[in-house]
Picture (tube, rainbow, N blue to C red):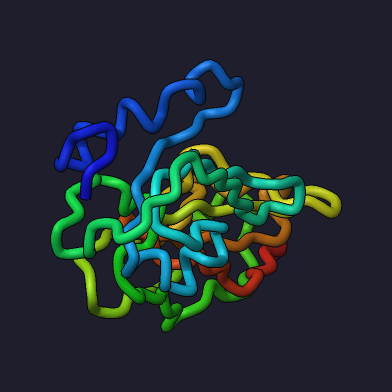
Length: 191
C-alpha cells in the first residue's frame, strides 16, 4: 500500500501522526489493517476501518477502561495482516483473542498483622503470543481505584491492617490487544 509515495507502513507513521503530539492526552498513532478492522475487539475500541488512527485508552471514575479513537487517514485496499509490520498490537487486537478467568479472587477474612493474598487465574485464547497484564483495584465509595504497584496475578498485603478491608477486583488485559476482562469482586474482612 502506498501513502505519501512510500510502500512501507512504518515510514508513513510519522506523516499520519503529525498534529496529535501536542495534545495533553497521551495518544498513539496506530495502523489498522483490513483483518484488524473486522475484529469485534477493535470495533468495541472504535477502530472499525483500515487506516491510520489516533488512539488512547483511560480509566474512568468507575474503574472501567474507556477507549477514544479518531481516524486520521482512511486507507482503501490497505495492507493485509500478513504484510502489516506496525507494533500496534498492545492497543489493537491483531487476532480474535479472548481472556478467560478460570479462578476468580475469593472473599476472605484476615487477621490484623497476617498476610492478605488475593489470586486470579486466567489465560488468553490461542492465536497470539500475548502476555496477560493485571491491575488490582479497591472500591472507594462508588468508585474503583487502582492499587499502586498491584500488577500481578496475586495481590499481596504483607501485613494486613483493618484499613485494608474492602472490595477488590482485578482488570486483565493482554499485550496483543484482547478485550479487557474484569474479575468478580472479592470482599476482604477483618477476622
